[in-house]
Image (cartoon, rainbow, N blue to C red):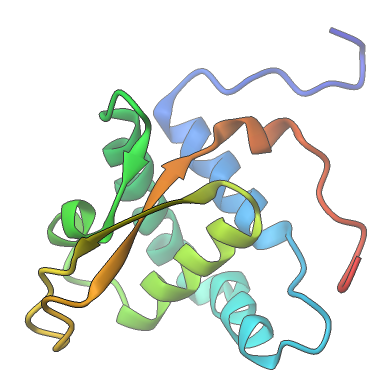
Length: 142
């Protein structure tokens, strides 16, 4: 390891903090106003605890799977009730943008009756913690 490298996280708390930082650090695609709005939700200091709680639930679910796969059907019931619903979707989108959640191409039927999405296809993601060691993009649209 060179003197400029950051040591790998050693606790779940450190992994969650690193994942949350990476999700917030990736700039939205230039011209994508929706992605920019989601990024603002994740960056808002009032949502820090919400973002970390969502990240923790997703990461813990994925690392418990031998293929590191996760889907909202599994982690949705584990989310604390105090989390703002808009932050959940925004966090997942930022995790995808950061390359930390990678779509597998597989889908499952959504079990979320409360949101009216029951039966609709829901993506299965693979957690890619290797993205934590990759440099972030230099700026929007790059």
